[in-house]
Length: 120
Image (cartoon, rainbow, N blue to C red):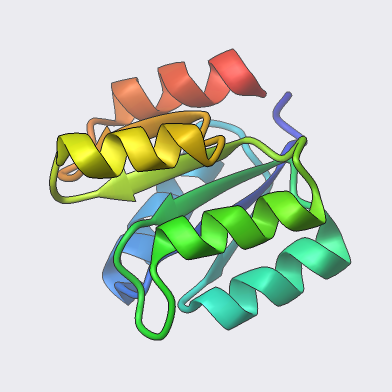
């Protein structure tokens, strides 16, 4: 499980650095971060990550549209949605598009790791 290839997609560079450090400290050695949807699509096409952590609010294309595009490429990739708001409509939309989970920021690492390890 610790060799799981994880892609973190968030336009907040501080969050990406924090997330990468937290995942590596937990033993995940294959962590890549990207800051926009287009980089994420390229990474999914080329690398087929084992799991994606995806922010809802991204410049250019929101996370829900990106989730749909990721699952057009490969429906088996678990995608954990990350957002600052626990909006019921957004949660339902994410679930209908195949999101594996929906986590709110500020992120509790215990919740993240529980969700991550349940799907990895």
